Amino acid sequence: MTQIKLFCPATIANLSCGFDVLGLCLDNAGDEMIVRKSDQKGVRITKIVGADLPLETEKNVSGVAALAMLATLDELDFGFEIEIYKNIKAGSGIGSSAASSAGAVFGINELLGKPYSRKDLVQFAMQGEKLASGNAHADNVAPALLGGFTLVRSYAPLDIIRIDSPEELFATVVHPQIELKTSDARSVLKQTVSLKSAIMQWGNVGGLVAGLYTKDYELIGRSLHDEIVEPLRSVLIPGFDLIKQTAYENGALGSGISGSGPSIFALSRGKNTADQIAKAMSEVYEKMNLPYEIHVSKINPDGVRIL
Image (cartoon, rainbow, N blue to C red; front, side):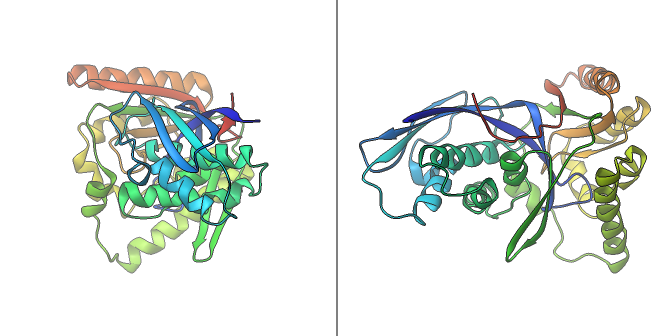
């Protein structure tokens, strides 16, 4: 095999209570990527469609992730070319950089005969995230590679737990058409939190994980509460409070900021409810005359996949 075509899925990170440690994989939103072997050594980005992103390997998240992986292997007498077809807008809050980073390392790994497991690949994809945001976080790249929900138990050493999604769980994500850079969204955060807030957050993280394992939809909903990050970031997102209230009024289990924003997610039980939430969210932004994109998706159990 000398060439591979991939679907690189969008993701929702943080999930309210799990800043930098929780994420999920979306099923029908994502980029496409072609990775092929090349006679020229190293990694080259040869084409990007759908976004104005750098072709220089060291300035592109997919290139940086790929180089991090190749640095751990014996020197090869060939290289790789990457074509990226972006459908996830940069700064959307649904893992644009993670999709590119995850796709690159997955594709190269396949063409090399899978020297690494999907979980092993997370550490390399994180280097792409470091280029994008200044922080090597795994809450997007882990679900992009592993599918389902993922929990980063530890970063040092890296310890990731994959969690299956309850079958009827759906995500609705609305992206108001403003760009909010992850680095900017991180700049508003405080470096210390009160013990009271931390205790509430720990309880919600435990509740959400327990709810996923026991398929307790109501527990999942009660646990989707952010005591620490959302109050600081929500002011950066137009209509956030109204969108969140609208989601609840239309049957959402819970709602919050997707990643660093500006996208807003809602989880619900069943596609009909998810569609109703999408319709109601759309009406809010239409009344505000604010352009938006909206996605309704089941939880993707597989992560990056071969097309």
